Each structure stands twice: as structure tokens, then as C-alpha cells.
Image (cartoon, rainbow, N blue to C red; front, top):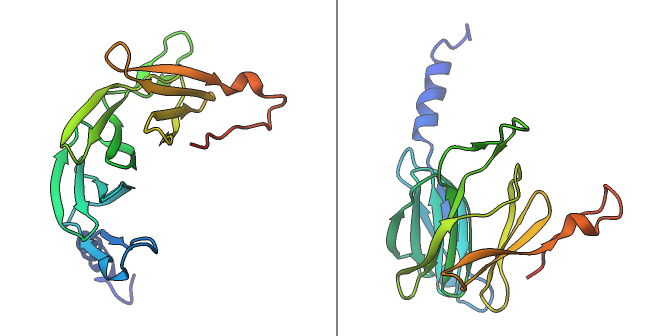
Length: 194
């Protein structure tokens, strides 16, 4: 910029000073006084959030999950083994999905499959309930994760496979619905409601 030759440098400086801020505002049944802000340190950005019964979690670009009470007190920071993809919470349970390694190449098709892993945490008891690889259809992506009313964790992949994490065999993913078989035409799509 000929008019302001320093403009570009200032934009770079300002970008370095940008910081992520988390704003928490409780639903109507909680006091409005409990809303709070938390500004993350420089060079740490918020990626996703999850909320449970009395806590909220923020995954950051540092591969950390910051745990907060509803009053805004940070109770802990968990270092994850890989970059966080998404999280979901319900009650005292938090499920964190993260990249567990480089994508796996299917040599017959040349396509790559995500190498995702999960940790299922009980926030109140501060324990890892279960952890391991996420079982997706070949060459698919994780498109949804959530809990049902009985606190069972479910996932859906881009091929329409709905799977549940069950306790049997020391926790494993069980396919429960192949929604692609239910499609009548290419425009049909299915979305889980838990």
C-alpha cells in the first residue's frame, strides 16, 4: 500500500495479538449472574465446546481441553494426544474425538480414511471411562456424535453408518444402522436424534 507502507506490518502484528474469548451464558433455569468470559492466552484458539450438567469444556489449538465450572472457574486442563476434531457432553460425561495418527491410505482406491480416536471421560469422578480408536466406514468422515437419554455414546459417519459405543468386550463400537440401505434416492439423508 503506497499510502501507508506500514499497514501490512500492522495487520500482521494485530493478527498475532488476536485472542480467542469464550463466552458462557447459562440457560434460563440458572442465574444470569453466572455468565462469564475467559480469554485464552495468545496463540491458543478455541476450536469447539461441550457442555454437561455442571461443567463446560473448551478444546483449543494447543491440543488441550480446558474444563470450567458453570461459575467460570477453570478446574483443569487436559492435554490430548492429537488435534481435537469435536467434543460432546451430557451429564457428567465428556467425549473427545481427536486425530490419533496420519490418515490411512486405501491402496486399492487411493483414498484416505481418518485415523480418529476418542476418550470418554467422567468429569465428576475425574476418570477416563474408555478410550481407543473410532470405527468408521472405510473412506468416510465422522459427521455426528452424541449421547442418547441413557448416556450411550453414538457416532454417524459420512457413509450413513450409525454406531454405538457399548460396554461389552471392554468397550467397542457396534454398528446399529446402515442408513444408506434405507435411501430410496440420492437426495435422501438421515440424521440421528438422541
